[in-house]
Length: 177
Image: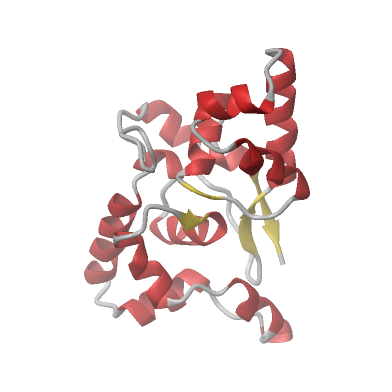
């Protein structure tokens, strides 16, 4: 369920559409740009594993949840931070939270193990159970614990966690090949 202070996928869609139109691109062409140039030495494996589809990008208009790494690719194309899509954002923090550059053939991903470590540390320092932390954050306890496996995360949930931690999304990203 979306909350008023959540990352806005609808606002992301509007920004993507505005940028796409300004560049005179179709959704397919814009999505190709978001995916970046294909590394000729690894044309098949890397490009297919992390490639966005135009339908995934356009679905941000109606979805309430979207896969985190894909959203990072969209944000990089816009040259914006996830924090810039939060209501009542602190503009100074938005500027500090810019996403890192990614070399050709790389893709920006969330480092969910690092996020889990910080989350678990904060939870333990506060003498909280997973359920206590989950209630404060607004995410299921199982979703928080699942981060320890290093898998994927989603928007807007990851931004709820980061807001609770008082940290930027950029601090918990890594470049994957």
